[in-house]
Image 1 (cartoon, rainbow over the protein chains, first blue to last red):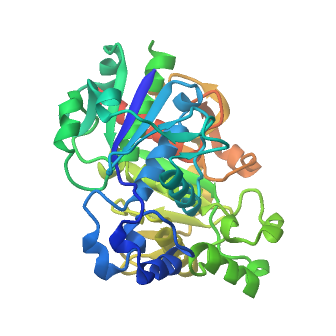
Image 2 (cartoon, rainbow over the protein chains, first blue to last red):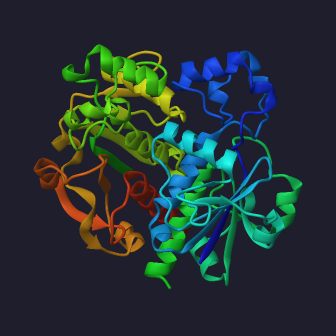
Image 3 (cartoon, each protein chain N blue to C red):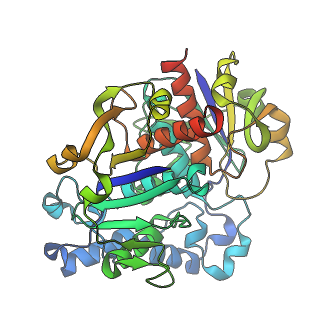
Length: 216
Length: 216
């Protein structure tokens, strides 16, 4: 079983400074209608400096989630998935979720999730739900995927693990917070260079699938 | 070097039946403005039966292209990339392209590509350009990624190849055309089950990267 924790995910509601007519009308122009999700692409250019460096990129979260839920390891029930956001909210995912593939439908779903704390047929059977756990509780002792980590043969590394608990950053720029760094017991690099969140996830899961199916 | 050929990619301009006011106004409602790209999500529901089973899903193409261009093998210059569309147009990609990560910007770029036949600073230095080659010329003798193919250890398989030329379907439903089937000299399955285009690409490229870096 692999536990994946997406950290500092670039997903939040519109902050107070963006709850104004001109921003709403820019969302309509860019995305057809307003969504209560901060997306730097829909913020008028003159106001973009208000968006923090890790904020306003739900597209990164969308792509990361699809890389996970599309992966055969996910449909095989071998992945336990959590998402921690820039605002320190923590969400847990059901094994049966299929996020919308269309970006604007995804924004609609995320607006509902951020507002209600869950999405699905009912709070009890929610596909994604906010959980009352701390990041320490779900991610302490994890392996952090990071360009600056040790560049090791990833399949051999996976074979050496008892438990695979991985942290992947889900933000556009900047370093991991100190809090996240403290949780990691080890830093692993999958490539000597920058990787997007979804590329890092796809590589990790492909190696884990290989280990499970071809090299157990 | 790996040659990747995305085939029957679900990307085309609006067909004549969709060049009407009510469709354009639906595009504005769904995507903020009209794009000259057929996207089933923006077609009014009552007209969706007009969209062929392989048509109208540029989001699949978007995700596939980002899976490729985000991959370290691509930045290492180890991938030669072609896209064949449902309408039998063929495009070649420059090694330095970074497609827009935002879906609507991607639609804008694809509208330009489908209209002009190239995108970039000039036709000569185009990042993507239409080429005057047939599918046979670029993909004959390829390995087709297909659920129904042989399920072999992918890293061993890659090591056994002299030349890696792969065909990946980039459409939502249905079987490969007979024409594509005829070009394949071998069918390889990466998982005993359906895979999205981007998941299949990510698995293939991760194994190819592993072979290159860790098991040459």
